[in-house]
Amino acid sequence: MRKKLVIEKVERKDRRLYLINDHPPFSLEEARPKGHMLVDSDHLSFIYILETDEDFIYVAIPYEFWNDVKQALAEEAAVVLKSGELELELTSFKEELTYLIENIDGNANYGEQMEQAVKEIFLT
Image (cartoon, rainbow, N blue to C red; front, side, top):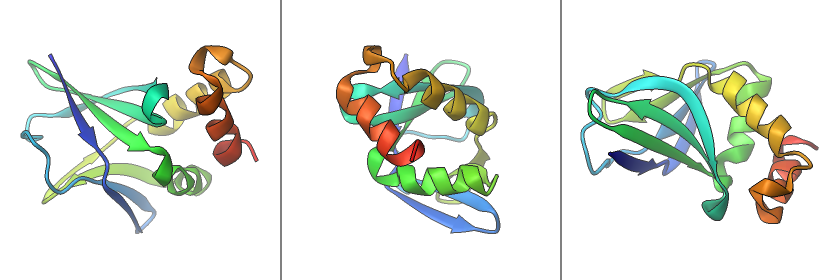
C-alpha cells in the first residue's frame, strides 16, 4: 500500500533544509528513507519515497519549494523531513534529484509543464 504526505512548508537552519508537514494523517514513527525519488508531473512535485514494513510513503515536494531545494543542493545541505518532534534525514536526496533533473531536461515523457518547470528552477 502507499500513502502520500505533502510538504506544507520549508525551513533552513544549520546547513539543513527541513521539509515540514506538522499534521500527517498517519504515523511516521516506523518510516525509514528508501533513498529513491520519483516525479509527479501532474502535480509538479518531486516524490521522495519512505518505507515501513507494510507501506510506502510518498513525500511530495511541490513546485513552490523547489527554489529552496535548489539552494540546499548548491549548499550541499542535508535534507530532512520534519513532523512534530520527528526528524528523518532523506538519504541519497541530492543524487536522486540530480539524476531526475538531468533525465527530465529535454525529455518529453515527463510532460511539457514539468520539463519547463524544472528548466526554470534548476537549469538556469
